[in-house]
Image (tube, rainbow, N blue to C red; front, side, top):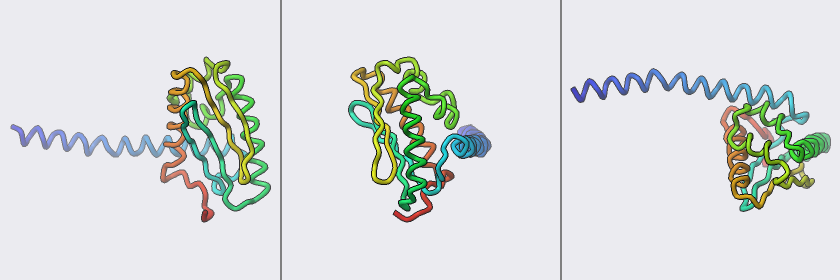
Length: 163
């Protein structure tokens, strides 16, 4: 009896795993396609970083080959995104990653309590999000983690250039 139960469980697991992998691949394909529509820079020359902090976190995009055109495109994109985030408009990340991103609804509804700052870096730009509200800090962390997961997938081939 135990052997039959074990065999049935293993058969079910083996049947379900390909569907889960296909679903993840489908999501990654959507992220890559939508990202190319939203982000004006060459994603293969850039790397996204999503760094949590005690008060929120940072979205940073780095261009590795010092291409000044790509750096300018990254900067204009993140400057625009920072302005949108200040208004509670997270439609671009929602379009890229899905409208059900963890933390997204909370960030959209509490924009007045989230500080958004844009800054240029030598190789791109960054957006810092912070809040004194620990629930919003948690939402920022969830939102960053969702993006980090998608952008660090083996299918997201960012940064073809050596570091």
